[in-house]
Length: 498
Ligand SMILES: *[C@@H]1O[C@H](CO)[C@@H](O)[C@H](O)[C@H]1NC(C)=O
Ligand SMILES: *[C@@H]1O[C@H](CO)[C@@H](O)[C@H](O)[C@H]1NC(C)=O
Ligand SMILES: *[C@@H]1O[C@H](CO)[C@@H](O)[C@H](O)[C@H]1NC(C)=O
Ligand SMILES: *[C@@H]1O[C@H](CO)[C@@H](O)[C@H](O)[C@H]1NC(C)=O
Ligand SMILES: *[C@@H]1O[C@H](CO)[C@@H](O)[C@H](O)[C@H]1NC(C)=O
Ligand SMILES: *[C@@H]1O[C@H](CO)[C@@H](O)[C@H](O)[C@H]1NC(C)=O
Image 1 (cartoon, rainbow, N blue to C red):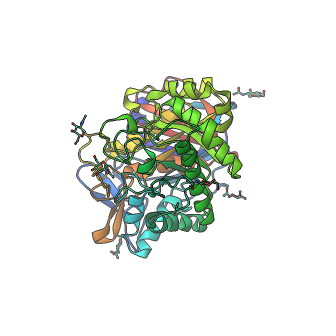
Image 2 (cartoon, rainbow, N blue to C red):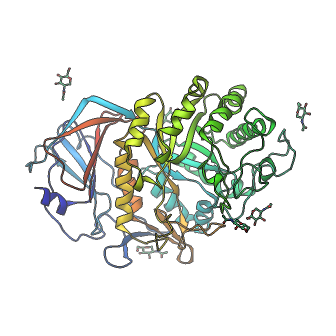
Protein backbone atom coordinates (compact mmCIF):
# COMPACT_ATOMS: atom_id res chain seq x y z
CA UNK A 1 0.00 0.00 0.00
CA UNK A 2 2.61 2.46 1.00
CA UNK A 3 4.43 1.67 -2.18
CA UNK A 4 1.39 2.64 -4.20
CA UNK A 5 1.27 5.89 -2.29
CA UNK A 6 4.86 6.60 -3.08
CA UNK A 7 4.33 5.98 -6.73
CA UNK A 8 1.01 7.77 -6.92
CA UNK A 9 1.66 11.39 -6.40
CA UNK A 10 3.73 13.91 -4.61
CA UNK A 11 1.57 16.76 -3.39
CA UNK A 12 -2.20 16.47 -3.23
CA UNK A 13 -4.88 18.89 -2.09
CA UNK A 14 -8.39 17.64 -1.60
CA UNK A 15 -11.52 19.62 -0.99
CA UNK A 16 -14.30 17.32 0.10
CA UNK A 17 -17.63 17.05 1.81
CA UNK A 18 -17.11 15.25 5.11
CA UNK A 19 -15.18 12.23 6.36
CA UNK A 20 -12.43 11.37 3.94
CA UNK A 21 -11.01 8.06 2.91
CA UNK A 22 -7.76 8.87 1.22
CA UNK A 23 -7.16 6.29 -1.41
CA UNK A 24 -4.03 5.33 -3.18
CA UNK A 25 -3.79 6.38 -6.75
CA UNK A 26 -1.87 3.68 -8.51
CA UNK A 27 -1.42 5.09 -11.97
CA UNK A 28 1.95 6.65 -12.56
CA UNK A 29 2.09 8.18 -15.95
CA UNK A 30 4.49 10.61 -17.44
CA UNK A 31 1.95 13.27 -17.99
CA UNK A 32 3.64 16.53 -18.83
CA UNK A 33 1.58 19.54 -19.60
CA UNK A 34 -1.76 17.85 -19.03
CA UNK A 35 -3.03 20.68 -16.83
CA UNK A 36 -2.33 23.34 -19.41
CA UNK A 37 1.14 24.04 -18.13
CA UNK A 38 3.61 24.75 -20.93
CA UNK A 39 6.40 22.65 -19.52
CA UNK A 40 9.98 23.62 -20.07
CA UNK A 41 12.67 21.28 -18.80
CA UNK A 42 15.90 22.51 -17.28
CA UNK A 43 17.37 19.02 -17.12
CA UNK A 44 15.91 15.76 -15.74
CA UNK A 45 12.66 16.28 -13.91
CA UNK A 46 13.28 19.99 -13.43
CA UNK A 47 10.19 21.49 -15.06
CA UNK A 48 8.82 24.99 -14.94
CA UNK A 49 5.55 26.18 -16.49
CA UNK A 50 6.20 28.97 -18.98
CA UNK A 51 3.81 31.93 -19.22
CA UNK A 52 4.02 34.82 -21.66
CA UNK A 53 1.85 37.67 -22.94
CA UNK A 54 -0.67 35.39 -24.67
CA UNK A 55 -0.59 32.18 -22.68
CA UNK A 56 -0.54 31.04 -19.06
CA UNK A 57 -1.77 27.85 -17.39
CA UNK A 58 -4.77 28.13 -15.09
CA UNK A 59 -6.02 26.15 -12.14
CA UNK A 60 -9.41 24.55 -12.71
CA UNK A 61 -11.90 25.48 -10.02
CA UNK A 62 -14.09 23.05 -8.15
CA UNK A 63 -17.81 22.81 -8.77
CA UNK A 64 -19.16 22.61 -5.19
CA UNK A 65 -22.06 20.41 -6.39
CA UNK A 66 -19.69 17.79 -7.73
CA UNK A 67 -17.47 17.93 -4.66
CA UNK A 68 -20.16 17.40 -2.05
CA UNK A 69 -22.21 14.47 -0.78
CA UNK A 70 -19.35 12.03 -0.46
CA UNK A 71 -17.53 13.32 -3.50
CA UNK A 72 -14.32 15.26 -3.58
CA UNK A 73 -12.15 17.39 -5.75
CA UNK A 74 -8.51 16.43 -6.01
CA UNK A 75 -5.53 18.49 -7.19
CA UNK A 76 -2.25 16.76 -7.83
CA UNK A 77 1.28 17.87 -8.58
CA UNK A 78 4.13 15.48 -9.18
CA UNK A 79 7.72 15.28 -10.31
CA UNK A 80 6.71 14.17 -13.82
CA UNK A 81 5.06 17.49 -14.57
CA UNK A 82 1.54 17.42 -13.14
CA UNK A 83 0.78 20.83 -11.71
CA UNK A 84 -2.40 21.21 -9.63
CA UNK A 85 -4.09 18.80 -12.02
CA UNK A 86 -7.75 18.59 -11.09
CA UNK A 87 -10.11 15.62 -10.95
CA UNK A 88 -13.35 14.70 -9.21
CA UNK A 89 -13.75 11.53 -7.24
CA UNK A 90 -16.07 9.77 -4.92
CA UNK A 91 -15.12 8.78 -1.40
CA UNK A 92 -16.92 5.50 -1.89
CA UNK A 93 -14.28 4.52 -4.43
CA UNK A 94 -12.24 1.43 -3.61
CA UNK A 95 -10.09 2.16 -0.60
CA UNK A 96 -6.60 0.76 -0.52
CA UNK A 97 -5.85 0.47 3.15
CA UNK A 98 -4.83 3.85 4.50
CA UNK A 99 -7.83 5.67 5.88
CA UNK A 100 -7.79 9.04 7.59
CA UNK A 101 -10.58 10.09 9.90
CA UNK A 102 -11.26 13.82 9.88
CA UNK A 103 -12.33 14.63 13.42
CA UNK A 104 -14.30 17.84 13.26
CA UNK A 105 -14.78 17.71 17.02
CA UNK A 106 -11.15 18.55 17.59
CA UNK A 107 -10.11 21.83 16.00
CA UNK A 108 -6.99 23.95 16.38
CA UNK A 109 -5.66 27.32 15.10
CA UNK A 110 -7.47 29.36 12.49
CA UNK A 111 -5.83 30.58 9.30
CA UNK A 112 -4.76 34.14 8.51
CA UNK A 113 -3.54 33.44 4.97
CA UNK A 114 -0.80 32.47 2.55
CA UNK A 115 1.19 34.78 0.32
CA UNK A 116 4.44 36.55 -0.46
CA UNK A 117 6.30 39.85 -0.27
CA UNK A 118 5.93 42.99 -2.39
CA UNK A 119 9.59 44.01 -2.46
CA UNK A 120 11.27 46.58 -4.69
CA UNK A 121 12.90 43.67 -6.54
CA UNK A 122 9.53 41.98 -7.15
CA UNK A 123 8.08 45.23 -8.51
CA UNK A 124 11.09 45.87 -10.74
CA UNK A 125 10.89 42.37 -12.20
CA UNK A 126 7.13 42.44 -12.72
CA UNK A 127 7.44 45.80 -14.48
CA UNK A 128 10.21 44.51 -16.73
CA UNK A 129 7.48 42.53 -18.53
CA UNK A 130 4.90 43.72 -21.07
CA UNK A 131 1.51 44.76 -19.69
CA UNK A 132 -0.21 41.54 -20.74
CA UNK A 133 2.53 39.33 -19.30
CA UNK A 134 2.35 41.30 -16.04
CA UNK A 135 -1.37 40.63 -15.98
CA UNK A 136 -0.77 36.90 -16.36
CA UNK A 137 1.79 36.99 -13.55
CA UNK A 138 -0.50 38.73 -11.06
CA UNK A 139 -3.43 36.53 -12.11
CA UNK A 140 -1.29 33.44 -11.47
CA UNK A 141 -0.84 34.51 -7.87
CA UNK A 142 -4.09 36.26 -7.03
CA UNK A 143 -6.97 35.38 -9.37
CA UNK A 144 -9.57 32.62 -9.11
CA UNK A 145 -7.74 30.99 -12.03
CA UNK A 146 -4.52 31.12 -10.04
CA UNK A 147 -3.47 30.17 -6.53
CA UNK A 148 -5.39 33.01 -4.84
CA UNK A 149 -2.90 34.45 -2.37
CA UNK A 150 -4.44 36.47 0.46
CA UNK A 151 -1.39 37.59 2.41
CA UNK A 152 1.27 40.18 1.53
CA UNK A 153 4.34 41.55 3.26
CA UNK A 154 5.66 45.04 2.59
CA UNK A 155 9.17 46.14 3.60
CA UNK A 156 9.03 49.56 5.30
CA UNK A 157 11.51 51.47 3.12
CA UNK A 158 14.52 49.55 1.77
CA UNK A 159 15.90 46.07 2.34
CA UNK A 160 18.56 44.05 0.54
CA UNK A 161 16.07 43.45 -2.32
CA UNK A 162 16.22 47.18 -3.16
CA UNK A 163 18.60 48.93 -5.54
CA UNK A 164 20.25 50.92 -2.71
CA UNK A 165 19.68 51.68 0.97
CA UNK A 166 17.14 54.44 1.73
CA UNK A 167 14.74 55.39 4.48
CA UNK A 168 11.63 57.59 4.64
CA UNK A 169 13.46 60.37 6.46
CA UNK A 170 17.19 60.78 6.01
CA UNK A 171 17.18 64.28 7.56
CA UNK A 172 19.40 64.10 10.60
CA UNK A 173 17.74 65.46 13.75
CA UNK A 174 14.19 65.49 12.31
CA UNK A 175 12.72 64.00 15.49
CA UNK A 176 9.19 65.06 14.57
CA UNK A 177 9.59 63.44 11.14
CA UNK A 178 8.34 66.59 9.45
CA UNK A 179 10.22 65.56 6.29
CA UNK A 180 8.97 61.96 6.34
CA UNK A 181 7.85 60.79 2.91
CA UNK A 182 7.35 57.62 0.96
CA UNK A 183 9.93 57.19 -1.82
CA UNK A 184 9.90 56.67 -5.57
CA UNK A 185 10.30 52.96 -4.84
CA UNK A 186 6.97 52.84 -2.98
CA UNK A 187 5.30 54.88 -5.69
CA UNK A 188 6.70 52.85 -8.59
CA UNK A 189 7.39 49.32 -7.41
CA UNK A 190 5.04 48.60 -4.50
CA UNK A 191 1.89 50.74 -4.33
CA UNK A 192 0.68 50.38 -7.95
CA UNK A 193 1.08 46.60 -7.86
CA UNK A 194 -0.68 46.23 -4.51
CA UNK A 195 -3.45 48.55 -5.68
CA UNK A 196 -3.89 46.54 -8.90
CA UNK A 197 -4.15 43.31 -6.89
CA UNK A 198 -6.65 44.86 -4.47
CA UNK A 199 -8.95 46.20 -7.15
CA UNK A 200 -8.77 43.25 -9.55
CA UNK A 201 -9.20 40.02 -7.62
CA UNK A 202 -11.92 38.47 -5.54
CA UNK A 203 -10.19 37.54 -2.32
CA UNK A 204 -9.19 40.20 0.18
CA UNK A 205 -5.56 40.95 0.81
CA UNK A 206 -4.22 40.94 4.36
CA UNK A 207 -1.07 43.08 4.44
CA UNK A 208 1.66 43.44 7.02
CA UNK A 209 4.79 45.58 7.04
CA UNK A 210 8.30 45.09 8.45
CA UNK A 211 11.21 47.53 8.85
CA UNK A 212 14.81 46.46 8.15
CA UNK A 213 16.48 49.55 9.60
CA UNK A 214 15.74 53.00 10.97
CA UNK A 215 17.31 55.98 9.19
CA UNK A 216 21.09 55.97 9.75
CA UNK A 217 21.01 59.18 11.86
CA UNK A 218 18.84 57.43 14.48
CA UNK A 219 21.32 54.60 15.01
CA UNK A 220 24.39 54.02 17.16
CA UNK A 221 26.52 53.21 14.10
CA UNK A 222 25.04 55.96 11.88
CA UNK A 223 24.50 53.45 9.11
CA UNK A 224 21.54 51.33 7.91
CA UNK A 225 23.88 48.34 7.54
CA UNK A 226 26.28 46.72 9.99
CA UNK A 227 26.05 46.36 13.73
CA UNK A 228 23.87 48.93 15.43
CA UNK A 229 20.72 49.74 17.38
CA UNK A 230 18.56 52.79 17.90
CA UNK A 231 20.30 55.42 20.06
CA UNK A 232 19.35 55.47 23.73
CA UNK A 233 16.67 53.51 25.54
CA UNK A 234 13.02 52.60 24.96
CA UNK A 235 10.96 55.61 26.04
CA UNK A 236 13.75 57.94 24.87
CA UNK A 237 13.55 60.40 21.97
CA UNK A 238 14.91 58.07 19.27
CA UNK A 239 12.47 55.29 20.24
CA UNK A 240 9.56 57.76 20.31
CA UNK A 241 10.49 58.96 16.84
CA UNK A 242 10.86 55.38 15.61
CA UNK A 243 7.31 54.58 16.84
CA UNK A 244 6.05 57.69 15.03
CA UNK A 245 7.79 56.43 11.87
CA UNK A 246 5.51 53.35 11.98
CA UNK A 247 2.47 55.61 12.41
CA UNK A 248 3.50 57.82 9.47
CA UNK A 249 4.11 54.77 7.29
CA UNK A 250 0.73 53.23 8.11
CA UNK A 251 -1.04 56.52 7.45
CA UNK A 252 0.81 57.09 4.18
CA UNK A 253 -0.18 53.66 2.85
CA UNK A 254 -3.76 54.07 4.07
CA UNK A 255 -3.86 57.34 2.12
CA UNK A 256 -3.02 55.34 -1.01
CA UNK A 257 -6.01 53.11 -0.33
CA UNK A 258 -3.86 50.38 1.21
CA UNK A 259 -4.91 49.57 4.77
CA UNK A 260 -2.29 47.59 6.66
CA UNK A 261 -3.41 44.81 8.97
CA UNK A 262 -0.21 44.29 10.95
CA UNK A 263 3.42 45.15 11.58
CA UNK A 264 6.38 43.19 12.84
CA UNK A 265 8.58 45.05 15.30
CA UNK A 266 11.73 44.44 13.27
CA UNK A 267 12.87 42.14 10.48
CA UNK A 268 15.39 39.67 11.96
CA UNK A 269 16.26 41.67 15.08
CA UNK A 270 19.42 39.69 15.77
CA UNK A 271 21.06 40.55 12.41
CA UNK A 272 21.82 44.00 13.79
CA UNK A 273 24.21 42.53 16.37
CA UNK A 274 26.44 40.98 13.69
CA UNK A 275 29.63 42.93 13.01
CA UNK A 276 29.70 44.33 9.46
CA UNK A 277 26.29 42.82 8.63
CA UNK A 278 26.12 43.44 4.90
CA UNK A 279 22.59 44.83 4.44
CA UNK A 280 19.96 46.87 6.30
CA UNK A 281 19.52 45.60 9.85
CA UNK A 282 18.93 46.89 13.36
CA UNK A 283 19.62 45.05 16.60
CA UNK A 284 17.00 44.30 19.25
CA UNK A 285 17.04 42.01 22.24
CA UNK A 286 13.64 40.64 23.27
CA UNK A 287 13.77 42.95 26.30
CA UNK A 288 14.35 46.00 24.09
CA UNK A 289 11.55 44.95 21.78
CA UNK A 290 9.21 44.43 24.73
CA UNK A 291 9.99 47.84 26.26
CA UNK A 292 9.70 49.62 22.90
CA UNK A 293 6.26 48.10 22.35
CA UNK A 294 5.09 48.96 25.86
CA UNK A 295 6.54 52.47 26.07
CA UNK A 296 6.50 53.65 22.47
CA UNK A 297 4.94 51.63 19.65
CA UNK A 298 1.81 50.35 21.41
CA UNK A 299 0.77 53.75 22.77
CA UNK A 300 1.68 55.55 19.51
CA UNK A 301 -0.59 53.25 17.49
CA UNK A 302 -3.42 53.66 20.01
CA UNK A 303 -3.10 57.45 20.12
CA UNK A 304 -3.27 57.61 16.34
CA UNK A 305 -6.38 55.47 15.83
CA UNK A 306 -4.22 52.56 14.73
CA UNK A 307 -4.87 50.36 17.74
CA UNK A 308 -6.40 47.74 15.43
CA UNK A 309 -3.03 47.15 13.71
CA UNK A 310 -1.64 43.80 14.90
CA UNK A 311 1.82 43.94 16.43
CA UNK A 312 4.01 40.88 15.89
CA UNK A 313 7.25 40.12 17.73
CA UNK A 314 10.41 38.24 16.68
CA UNK A 315 10.12 38.05 12.84
CA UNK A 316 13.13 35.75 12.91
CA UNK A 317 14.03 32.05 13.12
CA UNK A 318 12.08 29.76 15.45
CA UNK A 319 15.46 28.86 16.93
CA UNK A 320 14.75 31.72 19.36
CA UNK A 321 11.44 30.28 20.56
CA UNK A 322 9.96 30.01 23.09
CA UNK A 323 12.69 32.16 24.75
CA UNK A 324 11.92 35.35 22.81
CA UNK A 325 8.18 35.14 23.50
CA UNK A 326 8.81 34.41 27.18
CA UNK A 327 10.95 37.53 27.55
CA UNK A 328 8.37 39.74 25.85
CA UNK A 329 5.26 38.27 27.45
CA UNK A 330 6.74 38.45 30.93
CA UNK A 331 5.21 41.93 30.77
CA UNK A 332 1.41 42.03 31.09
CA UNK A 333 1.45 45.33 29.20
CA UNK A 334 3.32 43.78 26.30
CA UNK A 335 0.80 40.95 26.18
CA UNK A 336 -1.93 43.53 25.84
CA UNK A 337 -0.31 45.18 22.82
CA UNK A 338 1.10 42.14 20.98
CA UNK A 339 -1.11 39.88 18.83
CA UNK A 340 1.32 37.37 17.40
CA UNK A 341 4.76 35.85 16.94
CA UNK A 342 6.36 35.98 13.48
CA UNK A 343 8.83 33.32 12.33
CA UNK A 344 11.27 32.85 9.43
CA UNK A 345 12.16 29.43 8.02
CA UNK A 346 15.94 29.78 7.55
CA UNK A 347 17.02 27.72 10.55
CA UNK A 348 14.14 25.23 10.48
CA UNK A 349 16.55 22.50 9.41
CA UNK A 350 18.30 22.72 12.79
CA UNK A 351 15.27 23.59 14.96
CA UNK A 352 12.54 21.04 15.64
CA UNK A 353 9.02 22.39 15.11
CA UNK A 354 8.22 21.72 18.75
CA UNK A 355 9.64 25.22 19.35
CA UNK A 356 6.41 26.46 17.74
CA UNK A 357 3.93 24.24 19.54
CA UNK A 358 5.58 24.86 22.90
CA UNK A 359 5.27 28.61 22.28
CA UNK A 360 1.63 28.07 21.41
CA UNK A 361 1.05 26.09 24.60
CA UNK A 362 2.56 28.84 26.73
CA UNK A 363 0.76 31.68 24.97
CA UNK A 364 -2.30 30.14 23.28
CA UNK A 365 -3.97 33.51 22.72
CA UNK A 366 -1.12 34.70 20.46
CA UNK A 367 -1.07 33.56 16.85
CA UNK A 368 2.10 32.38 15.15
CA UNK A 369 2.66 33.49 11.55
CA UNK A 370 5.43 32.44 9.15
CA UNK A 371 6.57 35.75 7.66
CA UNK A 372 9.55 34.91 5.42
CA UNK A 373 10.97 31.96 3.52
CA UNK A 374 12.94 31.36 0.35
CA UNK A 375 15.09 28.68 -1.21
CA UNK A 376 18.67 29.36 -2.20
CA UNK A 377 19.45 31.53 0.83
CA UNK A 378 22.29 29.48 2.31
CA UNK A 379 25.83 29.97 0.99
CA UNK A 380 25.93 26.30 -0.03
CA UNK A 381 22.66 26.56 -2.03
CA UNK A 382 24.14 26.72 -5.53
CA UNK A 383 22.76 27.74 -7.94
CA UNK A 384 20.79 30.50 -6.27
CA UNK A 385 18.03 30.15 -8.88
CA UNK A 386 17.51 26.46 -9.56
CA UNK A 387 14.97 26.46 -12.38
CA UNK A 388 12.40 23.69 -12.01
CA UNK A 389 13.83 22.21 -8.81
CA UNK A 390 11.29 19.69 -7.53
CA UNK A 391 13.21 19.40 -4.27
CA UNK A 392 12.73 23.08 -3.52
CA UNK A 393 8.98 22.64 -4.09
CA UNK A 394 8.95 19.70 -1.70
CA UNK A 395 10.95 21.71 0.84
CA UNK A 396 8.24 24.39 0.75
CA UNK A 397 5.38 21.89 1.13
CA UNK A 398 7.18 20.08 3.93
CA UNK A 399 7.90 23.25 5.88
CA UNK A 400 4.34 24.54 5.46
CA UNK A 401 2.74 21.27 6.63
CA UNK A 402 5.12 21.06 9.56
CA UNK A 403 4.35 24.65 10.54
CA UNK A 404 0.59 24.15 10.20
CA UNK A 405 0.71 21.00 12.31
CA UNK A 406 2.48 23.06 15.00
CA UNK A 407 -0.03 25.91 15.32
CA UNK A 408 1.23 28.30 12.66
CA UNK A 409 -1.63 30.34 11.13
CA UNK A 410 -0.22 31.14 7.71
CA UNK A 411 2.90 31.24 5.61
CA UNK A 412 4.53 34.11 3.72
CA UNK A 413 6.99 33.57 0.93
CA UNK A 414 9.74 36.11 0.26
CA UNK A 415 9.95 38.02 -3.11
CA UNK A 416 6.96 37.15 -5.31
CA UNK A 417 9.14 37.52 -8.42
CA UNK A 418 12.89 37.58 -9.05
CA UNK A 419 15.03 37.73 -12.19
CA UNK A 420 17.10 34.92 -13.73
CA UNK A 421 19.95 35.70 -11.34
CA UNK A 422 17.75 35.80 -8.21
CA UNK A 423 17.82 39.57 -7.84
CA UNK A 424 18.06 42.48 -8.13
CA UNK A 425 19.66 42.81 -4.70
CA UNK A 426 22.04 45.68 -3.95
CA UNK A 427 24.43 43.44 -1.92
CA UNK A 428 24.09 40.53 -4.39
CA UNK A 429 22.34 38.37 -1.76
CA UNK A 430 20.59 36.45 -4.56
CA UNK A 431 17.99 33.77 -3.78
CA UNK A 432 15.26 31.76 -5.54
CA UNK A 433 11.58 32.60 -6.04
CA UNK A 434 8.45 30.64 -7.06
CA UNK A 435 8.24 32.97 -10.08
CA UNK A 436 11.33 33.79 -12.11
CA UNK A 437 11.06 36.53 -14.70
CA UNK A 438 12.91 36.38 -18.01
CA UNK A 439 12.57 39.95 -19.21
CA UNK A 440 14.52 39.32 -22.43
CA UNK A 441 11.91 36.91 -23.75
CA UNK A 442 8.95 38.62 -22.00
CA UNK A 443 8.04 35.44 -20.17
CA UNK A 444 8.07 34.07 -16.64
CA UNK A 445 8.59 30.65 -15.14
CA UNK A 446 6.33 29.13 -12.50
CA UNK A 447 8.46 26.78 -10.46
CA UNK A 448 7.47 23.73 -8.37
CA UNK A 449 7.62 26.07 -5.34
CA UNK A 450 4.77 28.08 -6.87
CA UNK A 451 2.49 25.04 -7.16
CA UNK A 452 3.55 23.72 -3.74
CA UNK A 453 2.41 26.99 -2.16
CA UNK A 454 -0.73 26.87 -4.31
CA UNK A 455 -1.74 23.53 -2.78
CA UNK A 456 -2.20 25.46 0.46
CA UNK A 457 -3.09 29.04 -0.54
CA UNK A 458 -5.88 28.15 -2.95
CA UNK A 459 -7.70 25.67 -0.74
CA UNK A 460 -7.12 26.70 2.87
CA UNK A 461 -9.20 29.88 2.94
CA UNK A 462 -8.61 32.52 5.61
CA UNK A 463 -10.56 31.64 8.79
CA UNK A 464 -10.29 27.91 8.06
CA UNK A 465 -9.66 25.89 11.20
CA UNK A 466 -7.21 23.05 11.42
CA UNK A 467 -8.90 19.78 12.31
CA UNK A 468 -7.53 16.62 13.82
CA UNK A 469 -6.65 13.90 11.31
CA UNK A 470 -6.53 10.35 12.63
CA UNK A 471 -4.94 7.83 10.25
CA UNK A 472 -5.83 4.17 10.81
CA UNK A 473 -2.16 3.22 10.63
CA UNK A 474 1.20 4.95 10.89
CA UNK A 475 1.79 7.15 7.90
CA UNK A 476 4.42 5.77 5.59
CA UNK A 477 7.84 7.39 6.01
CA UNK A 478 8.14 10.76 4.30
CA UNK A 479 4.39 11.22 4.06
CA UNK A 480 2.76 14.22 5.71
CA UNK A 481 -0.85 15.34 5.98
CA UNK A 482 -2.77 18.30 7.36
CA UNK A 483 -6.49 19.09 7.26
CA UNK A 484 -8.81 22.06 7.67
CA UNK A 485 -12.46 22.89 7.86
CA UNK A 486 -13.11 26.00 5.82
CA UNK A 487 -15.63 28.75 6.51
CA UNK A 488 -17.79 27.25 3.72
CA UNK A 489 -17.72 23.98 5.76
CA UNK A 490 -15.76 22.07 3.10
CA UNK A 491 -12.82 20.02 4.35
CA UNK A 492 -9.45 20.63 2.71
CA UNK A 493 -6.69 18.07 3.21
CA UNK A 494 -3.15 18.38 1.90
CA UNK A 495 -0.93 15.36 1.57
CA UNK A 496 2.77 15.46 0.79
CA UNK A 497 4.61 12.31 -0.22
CA UNK A 498 8.35 12.85 -0.49
C1 LIG B 1 3.17 32.18 -25.74
O1 LIG B 1 3.20 30.81 -25.47
C2 LIG B 1 2.32 30.06 -26.27
C3 LIG B 1 2.33 28.65 -25.73
O2 LIG B 1 3.63 28.15 -25.66
C4 LIG B 1 2.75 30.16 -27.70
O3 LIG B 1 1.88 29.43 -28.51
C5 LIG B 1 2.73 31.62 -28.12
O4 LIG B 1 3.24 31.76 -29.41
C6 LIG B 1 3.56 32.46 -27.16
N1 LIG B 1 3.32 33.85 -27.44
C7 LIG B 1 4.30 34.69 -27.65
C8 LIG B 1 3.92 36.11 -27.88
O5 LIG B 1 5.46 34.32 -27.68
C1 LIG C 1 -18.04 14.21 17.67
O1 LIG C 1 -19.00 14.62 18.62
C2 LIG C 1 -20.30 14.05 18.42
C3 LIG C 1 -21.27 14.69 19.40
O2 LIG C 1 -20.71 14.74 20.67
C4 LIG C 1 -20.20 12.54 18.57
O3 LIG C 1 -21.46 11.97 18.32
C5 LIG C 1 -19.19 12.00 17.55
O4 LIG C 1 -19.01 10.63 17.73
C6 LIG C 1 -17.86 12.70 17.70
N1 LIG C 1 -17.00 12.29 16.60
C7 LIG C 1 -15.75 11.87 16.77
C8 LIG C 1 -15.02 11.49 15.54
O5 LIG C 1 -15.22 11.81 17.87
C1 LIG D 1 8.52 68.63 17.76
O1 LIG D 1 7.18 69.06 17.96
C2 LIG D 1 6.95 69.51 19.28
C3 LIG D 1 5.46 69.77 19.43
O2 LIG D 1 4.97 70.45 18.32
C4 LIG D 1 7.80 70.73 19.55
O3 LIG D 1 7.59 71.20 20.86
C5 LIG D 1 9.27 70.38 19.37
O4 LIG D 1 10.08 71.50 19.48
C6 LIG D 1 9.51 69.75 18.01
N1 LIG D 1 10.87 69.23 17.98
C7 LIG D 1 11.72 69.48 17.00
C8 LIG D 1 13.07 68.84 17.09
O5 LIG D 1 11.43 70.19 16.07
C1 LIG E 1 -13.64 41.15 1.85
O1 LIG E 1 -13.79 42.08 2.89
C2 LIG E 1 -15.05 42.70 2.91
C3 LIG E 1 -15.04 43.78 3.96
O2 LIG E 1 -14.60 43.27 5.18
C4 LIG E 1 -16.13 41.66 3.14
O3 LIG E 1 -17.39 42.25 3.14
C5 LIG E 1 -16.05 40.62 2.02
O4 LIG E 1 -16.97 39.59 2.26
C6 LIG E 1 -14.65 40.04 1.93
N1 LIG E 1 -14.54 39.20 0.74
C7 LIG E 1 -14.09 37.95 0.80
C8 LIG E 1 -14.05 37.21 -0.50
O5 LIG E 1 -13.71 37.42 1.83
C1 LIG F 1 27.76 52.18 5.82
O1 LIG F 1 28.56 51.03 5.91
C2 LIG F 1 29.02 50.56 4.65
C3 LIG F 1 29.74 49.24 4.87
O2 LIG F 1 30.75 49.39 5.83
C4 LIG F 1 29.89 51.60 3.99
O3 LIG F 1 30.29 51.15 2.72
C5 LIG F 1 29.08 52.87 3.85
O4 LIG F 1 29.88 53.89 3.34
C6 LIG F 1 28.52 53.31 5.19
N1 LIG F 1 27.60 54.41 4.98
C7 LIG F 1 27.70 55.51 5.70
C8 LIG F 1 26.64 56.55 5.41
O5 LIG F 1 28.55 55.69 6.54
C1 LIG G 1 34.62 44.77 9.65
O1 LIG G 1 35.02 45.72 8.67
C2 LIG G 1 36.19 46.42 9.02
C3 LIG G 1 36.40 47.53 7.98
O2 LIG G 1 36.28 47.00 6.68
C4 LIG G 1 37.36 45.42 9.09
O3 LIG G 1 38.53 46.10 9.44
C5 LIG G 1 37.04 44.36 10.13
O4 LIG G 1 38.02 43.37 10.14
C6 LIG G 1 35.69 43.71 9.85
N1 LIG G 1 35.34 42.86 10.96
C7 LIG G 1 34.90 41.61 10.81
C8 LIG G 1 34.59 40.87 12.08
O5 LIG G 1 34.74 41.09 9.72
